[in-house]
Length: 416
Image (cartoon, rainbow, N blue to C red; front, side, top):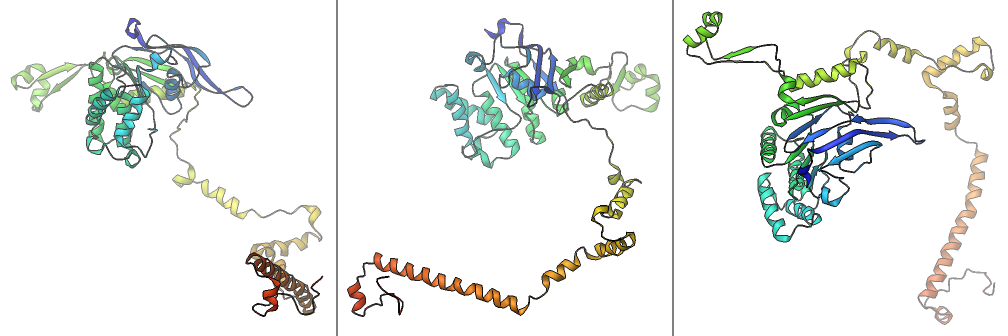
């Protein structure tokens, strides 16, 4: 059903605006995006932080509703269970149940897709072997490293055998060998007929596996096309040869053949990383709006030790506390000693006043106040003792027989 359409993913003037409390536009995450991803290709969606990549993926998956525009995925809407069942998604962060083992995690997601028990078991075994976690199948995923968590996350994205695979930073945290294995896996999946939408900041990985790329900045598509056509310089030629002498270099092709060295003539290509940085720099020079961070490439003066940073600090430490004129009881001459006292210890007079010993009369007053408090405490203890006697079943006859005292005070009226 999905391959009847020309594109696996297609957006029409897609716009997503995050409003503030009053409903006014605060952040324009996506601005009129027209994205087209063909079937059976690996498409790299690139851009700096805050350019709208993750927001685009969430809108495609119906996790966010677009403000304007339309999205068509596999010929329909991803809110339709028949469409979403054909999609595998690996988010930027692997949100997994940390107390489930790797096998239990895959079984859990297989049950969500309604896979039969035999199919689940077969796919779980295959996926664990594919991502290299067979020996750790019974370990809780909460004990996994980030690279291992990305592996099990990729496995859960493939448990339903999806037609479209959406991957957000799939190789983040992986070592170079694991990264190479994952890239080879993506290429094999594309050969098997899968469509992959890939977001990554690792440009070398994108350059190795993607058929086409698009670079976002400020929520808008800046450049889109085949990787080779974007990076290749068609107006220049370069020659790659093996080890040859300096004399052979002057004769170029003839002397290269005479030296029995191979000669290859082709157009030189930029590295994707250089092309990416150039595209973003061009967008920044045009002062295009963006909700992401923009690096100026400059370091603050206090870090570089430039003049000016220390001047600010000098001004801060030399600033004295200013006192309003209404609070001054004396003339201008009397304020100078006060400022000096503030430098040596603000409020020394108050400290002396607090630490002075109190007069004897006041100590006697305090003692007289505490005497009734002790009596009240004794009364409370007597009441508690009476309640304890009642709870333990002691009667007045036992008290009068002399086994235990009644707990009454001497001279106190019993009837009272």
